[in-house]
Length: 69
Figure (tube, one colour):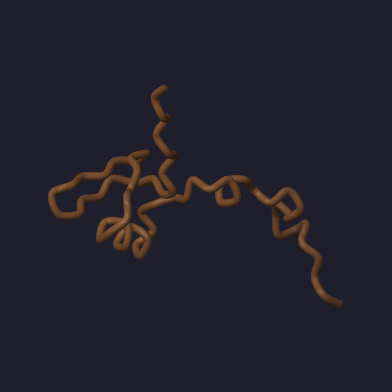
């Protein structure tokens, strides 16, 4: 039975180049120099469920936020 490939932890959210490798939106970004740079400049998104799901208890607009009295 073939093993399914693991879901990457980070995927590119824009096109960028590190060395000879070009990453396009949606491409997995593995560890190493490419991931270090992508994290530093915000070129990747986490594929973790907690990072992609909005917090349902958080107010959606500033008008809905409570202000301290």
